[in-house]
Image 1 (tube, rainbow, N blue to C red):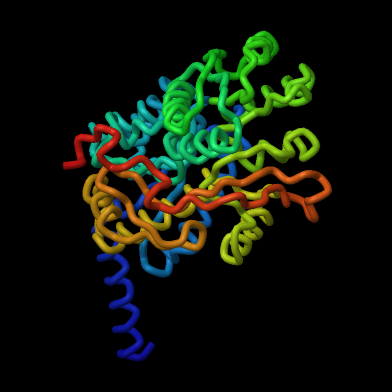
Image 2 (image 1 turned 180 degrees about the vertical axis):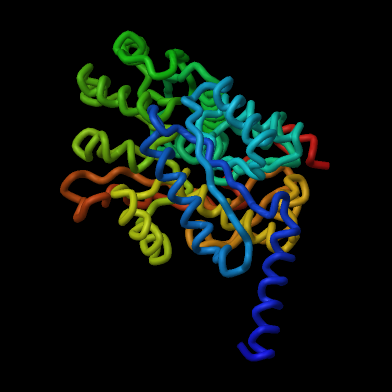
Length: 400
């Protein structure tokens, strides 16, 4: 080997070693905490792990001399299990950042652990707006959606188009009551009224008695303040009970493409929903989603898209900072403008809220769908400045 080539090889090795030496243990370790086996497995789960892997590859970490590892854990939608996994990740496995975290009760527990241990948390699949309100943390970014945005997008619009009386069917954990509260506020402000609030256990097999109460309330709209398998179960059971034929209508407050796929257009048609992402939104989302589909055999949901975009921005901040210190990286993420193919350009507010447009879609009739996963038609765009709760409205201590 010539002297010049030897010098170049030594310099390259030194540069890579120097880059890695800036990071704890020489490795940036990402923990995907998700639902791998429960009711949110299709909308998060293995697809969220794949989205994180795609972000690392697209960022080009290996070419930049940044060693990145991904681990995953199944929290089974229980805060105590999620907390145990994360404590072990932080204390023993040297995980630097936790991502995804469907189920608000788990996310809120992990949010506090992350704050105490000064790591980083990127929530993309939990909805509680408390994450950027009373529970806000300098170590957390809430990326994709929240209960306030869903309430603002669906609750207000449905009232303004005639759905003035509501009955809520609400799942009994942190996400459900928060979504119900935020939606009720939007309904009342728009001139509507909530006539009854019905709570059901998480993942209960039979929702019939709860739906009979909602049906008999006489409310025009039955708002589903639940998600995943509970939402699918409610809509299927409601169809058997004749809800819809008598003039009542479901409003799904958190519905994903996976839910519609499971229900089928015949059952889900006409359903209004608010989302931050749809695979068929534009050429860039279509291109990325087709890559995702090749591996997963399902189109991505907004939570999975949020994992990809948040991990991509996290790695950009780590690179710019040359450190994986949790508190400092989150601060850097807020300082840098966001830009990715799925959500476009945006910002992260001081309270940790990632801001971008939200979209109101209607589920197509079977006759309107021309291809597999062709499920939505656009009804309206909610711009970034009105899509999320005003920064001073949540009581976050980080907002001055």
